[in-house]
Structure formats: structure tokens, C-alpha cells
Length: 113
Image 1: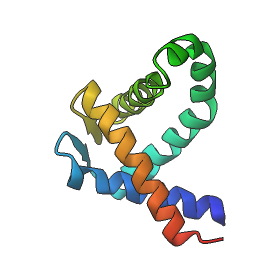
Image 2 (image 1 turned 60 degrees about the vertical axis):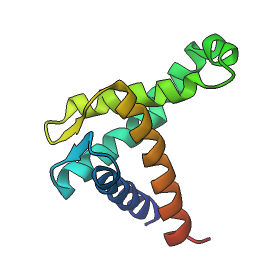
Image 3 (image 1 turned 135 degrees about the vertical axis):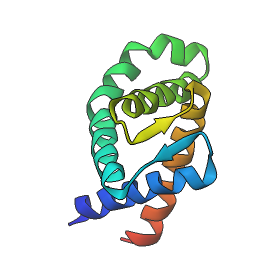
Image 4 (image 1 turned 45 degrees about the horizontal axis):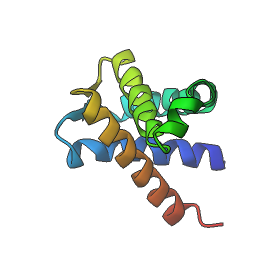
């Protein structure tokens, strides 16, 4: 049940992004649900592998490269769907940061342990 709630929270966070950034658009709630699933899969499977491979660059940049990596993964997922658009790389970096903050805030408000 918690997994379903987290999935819905992430979809709601995706739906909030176009109201905060004009460079991000999402067409429907169904698209947001699909994008939330793919983002969850990418962040669970692909992100740890890429973090390990780019560890030297991350250490040299004092961890700032993680923001770039998150933006690249967010942008990659946006290219997979026709109903989800991100204007460019730096928009994807900012959108990824906003997405994580919004989903964290919603999950702490809704999923109190």
C-alpha cells in the first residue's frame, strides 16, 4: 500500500512541476503516472550504476556532478514520452531538483510514520 501511495505522490509532484517551471509540461495524469514509474525504475536501477561509474568526477566536483547526473536522467526520461516535455538540459537539472523536493515534502506530509 505504501508503494502505491509513493507512486501517486511522485505523479502529483510531476503534475506540480509545470506550475513552477514553464519549461516543463506534462499532458495528463496518466502520463504522470507512467513517467513516475519510469523515473522510479531509472533511479532504482540505472542511477546507482552511473553514480559508481562517475565517482571520480563526483569527488572532484565535491558532489555537484550528482545534480548533473540527476538532470541527465530526468531529461532522458522526458525524451521517452510524447506527453512529457522538458525544454533543455539546465531546465531538466532544475526540474529534477524541484521534483525531488516536492515529492519529499508531499511524502513527509502524507506518509507520516
